[in-house]
Image (cartoon, rainbow, N blue to C red):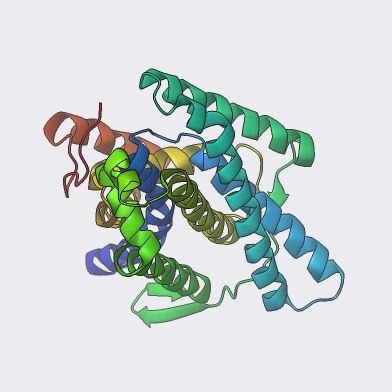
Length: 304
């Protein structure tokens, strides 16, 4: 493969991976933008989405339902379960700590993450399940040795449609205006007629829906292995993407996710795929040292 072909192929790989990171990172950045906390349990919500979708898809296909219809129903089920899970997390774990010292919700988030892993382990066991082959995998040769699969095209298109829908919601709807007002000042937003509790719960649920879809797309493309621990690494990388773009900044999550995907893909192509995870954490260290506010800065006030 020529140098140019290698670059384009890795660029495509980075776009696919980065779009998934961006979808998960939006959950981190929205919660931080409103509450000023890092929801480290978000990676486990991503995992639950993949596990639920795998279970529903397998059952429906076994009952004779078409593959595409089974996948659509499974994605809807995963979104509903993840939204309920995130609503419960916010209501039970985070709301009582809203005015506590900043360290308390951080420790709670880590604890919730372990609880969700334990619940998933009890429900699905320790096995590594294979996600059914529901998306077309045929490869389309673009030129030379460069190609892309239909599965990867679907992943990128669905990811950008979902993120575009979120941007529309935040900037063009009543709920979006309430979210932006709450992120600026919760107390003032309450005086203006906004229900902060409802807005915060909605924010958690929207982020969970995006994470559920990302979990399904991730499971269908990367080996199809679904297990109770699968959310940790993608969740951490999505957090890095949010920090890279500027945590609390929604466009920053998109930019950070795509940038991190590109860094990983180029590092894997030109150095070694064995160090793919290392590249992500090197990026995190560099960002924290040289530009702590991220590539696009931070639009919300830091309430630390």
